[in-house]
Length: 179
Image (cartoon, rainbow, N blue to C red; front, side):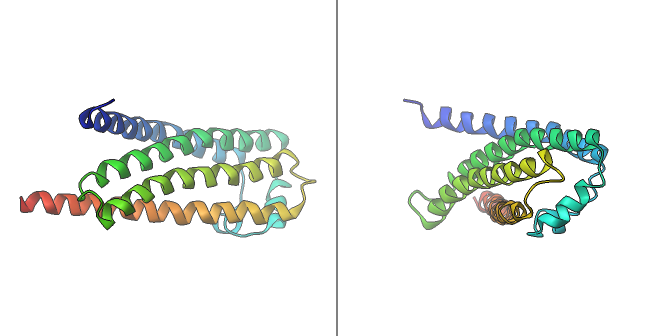
C-alpha cells in the first residue's frame, strides 16, 4: 500500500502532466479551429441548442475545412483528458488541507469527481458535434439539443470546479500565513 507521501507525489505528478498536456494541446485545437474557418460563436454553437445554426455554419465550409474542424475536435479529447486529470488531482491535493471528514473535505472529494464528469460531458458534447460535422449538410438538426445540453453541463461543472479550486487555494495560503 502506498504511503500518503507517495499518493501526494502521484497526484502532484498527475496535476503537472495534466497542466502540461493542456498547455500544449489547447493551442493546437485553437489553431485547427481557426484554420477551419468555422464562424459559429460559442454562445450560439455550444450553448445555442440550435442545430440549424450549426448546419448554416458548416454549409459555408469546404470539405477540407470540415476535416480541420473534425481534427480539432479529435485533438480536443486530449485536452479533456488533461483538464480532467488536472481538476481531479488538484482538487484532491487541496482537499488534503482540510480537516479529515469535515464538510470541506467532503465537498473537495465531490469536486474532484466533478472535474472528471465535466471532461466526460465535454467528450459527449464532442460526440454530437463530430456526428454533425461528419454529415455537415444532412445531419438532423435536433442533434444541436443534446450537444448543447452536454456543453452546458460541462461549462457549469468547470466553473464550479475552477471556483472551488481558487477558493481552496486562497484559503490554503491564508491558513499558511496564520501558522
